[in-house]
Length: 522
Image (cartoon, rainbow, N blue to C red):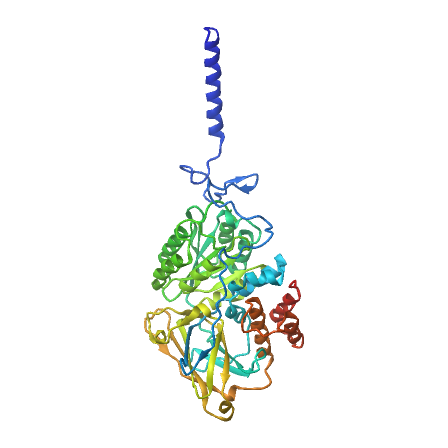
């Protein structure tokens, strides 16, 4: 290089270095890139108004996914079989009051317009008991000093001329409200929540709750994406504007470290614990955990270790694309909580406006049901739904065996298909008996309720509207499951005939179910 060019080259090199340094200084620092000293109420990391995901992390959902992804595996439906009572005459199960499956089914039909054959491919995530328990039925209130009221009805089975259908509904007492609510909202703000039916809907949904809170309540908000962050801690429930401001500041970005968020949420819940109150984490997510604990089995183990501290974990599911139903159910079932799915503002108003505070006050823990069938009158039985809630007979009195929780005013409905003997119709003896066992909140020893006999006195040839509607719901799920117990000729059109003959004018939720069936593409 000549002497003339060397100074010129040096000047150009220096200018290049200066320009590079200026460019680095002007670049915004993303969360997680070394120290971040920007405003802590809006770590959005946006580019042109959209979240800019961290390297190798979840980049979120398309705003209008062409088809929902309910769960990556979509396992086959494993229906409960008929069991001969001369081999096994006892059926034991855990109570379940979740309703998420039905709300998700509604979402798929309302927004995705899936054909019936495509809906069947999601059938394993349509849990029959959650469809049944979404609706309310006429039920006897508990007697004085009793926790549960029990109703039973037996009718000829509409899909099998050789069997009868039994429905039992248990209603918990409307207990006195707790001294206060210590609620920790654990909110997923990862990139996968960046769609209109996820974080924006979540923010709107929570607004229904704030009007019900009082000065005795303590509200905290923990968010998680690549890491967890405490947005609000121990705020009085009547400080509505502070709570809403904290919610509205949230933005979606990054990966999904649910483990870190759960750990922090339990710490905050424990720090603000209210003796005799409703201490609960309410997790809102699409269930797509991709950092830390991520599998259903890992989640079960982690949450099960935490529940003994008297802090419950309930789950709210949002969104369709990339939705992980299995994870969400595992969290709620093992965290002594309830699992709801929020598919729109109508469901948000129902859950947050009327259900959340009342029914999330637990009145009975580890609720187990056990039915003893008399083989002389019932030759076989098939439990409809509750496939992942079945317990062994000896688990009923085993206080170390976890079961479902029931909130104030909650109803639990269980249905069985039964094969009965001719002698059953001529006896006044009970065909079966129902026993219920539960723990009072915070105690370690369970207590039994009285035994409820069920038999011919509960049988009728003319089912009431509650029973006809339950039959329609069960048959719909049988079709969605492509059930081996569904008879040839069972169809949505036939189910609609039954529903159209019912007076649903005072039951808007049932009318909506009927309308949903008319929208399914055949």
